[in-house]
Length: 187
View (cartoon, rainbow, N blue to C red):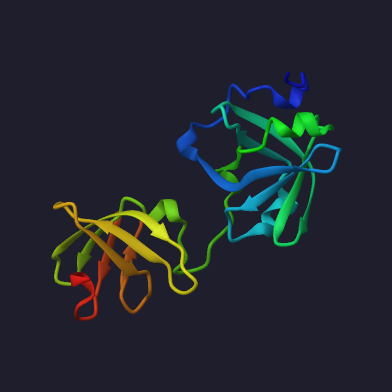
């Protein structure tokens, strides 16, 4: 049974899903007062201090607008409390959901920093112009992230997203020029 809280009503003016960006995954309830534990999907957890309203895509796919009542960090995770979710039963409705924000809530990035969504879909070519493929995913590693690049023949290349290799990144033109070390493209 859903709580009839007005903060849950779908916003008829909400942006299309393509304009929303995931920042946390709701993993389980916590306590008896409607709190939810979330796994961070952002490198900027400080953003929660400025958020008042977020979008939550529930496990059933429904997108709802929720007011963030408070948040705090505990053992490497964030605990979220939403307005109108005051019991463990109400909070359970959100478990498995994804917390999203609109483009206007994105943090300012520094020079040579990019959001994953900006890199996905970029064409990758060598400095001499030889096409390599299209970025389909970013793999986070303990070190340098890897661009997962699929070529036109169904092959996959893992290219370290390091300045020494990815020498020219133009997200507006959706183009990344690389200077691969010998043997990288044969792996």
